[in-house]
Amino acid sequence: MKNKLLIIVFLICAAASCDSGNSSEQVTEITYKSVPEFNADSAYAFIQQQVDFGPRVPMTEGHSLTRDWIIDKFEEFGLTVQRQDFQVKTYDGLTWDLTNIIASYKPEAKKRIMISAHWDTRRIADKDTERIDEPIDGANDGGSGVGVALELARIIATSELKPDVGVDFILFDGEDDGEPETAYTRDNSQVWWCHGSQHWSKNPHEKGYNAYFGILLDMVGAKGARFYREGYSMYYAKNIVNKVWNYGIELGFSDHFILKDAGEITDDHYFVNRDAKIPMIDIIEFSPQTGFGRYHHTHDDNMDLIDTRTLKAVGQTVLFTIYQE
Image: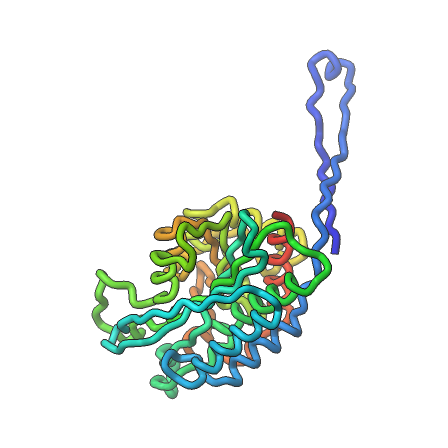
């Protein structure tokens, strides 16, 4: 896929020529680097497989099966894979064994792009009216970001077209276990969300690790999803937001990438920005008018929600961004 953008540059004439009524016009052609096609059906299948394992709640069978499967897939694609195992305390006093998964393409490359998602799911449906104490499928909240990341890795590793940069796929564990919606008090001294990114950002898998920028994928597969410019992304990495959103619009996905600002969201990218000092943006479905989608932290977050058109919009835009570096 080759994309071209024609820019009409109107040259302001000098005073002498303006007097004569002369003006000039110059056409400049910008040619982008060729990019493979993102396969949304493949990304969908990766999401389905995660859901089929069952809820990916830490310390459960579904969680361990998914972890091993993700590692196997990255290795199957030929990437270099590392596990980052660590322990955390949860908001209700549990001790959890968690694993961040790091898969690297072209690990020798100095210029690197970081692609992230979280691979765990929420153990309660605290925004639902039924089965509140049961874990959710997390097809979109968790599953979609991982599905897109896996498909990006597969394409980059197997396509004849290769990006010029190295890419690190860093999948965080323990993102979705903050206090329930019904909690009357919160401990402001401790953020109970985003355990994996909090740990990794202070203990990167490689000493001195750095990336040119990062993109976090969170809830990127719902039907009709609209992605606004999230607040922390604009604060820490406005130029990256503008670049990605403009690419998405140029590629024909203006129904998904909206040039309007939303509020700040405490998500994995916040800790990567604050603690690891890597500019990272968040592609996330969050409306400035209505907040998260109706499915958020409910049992409606299942495969019926996932749409290949949304996966295509996000996947192709991120793939395009990587290949232009």
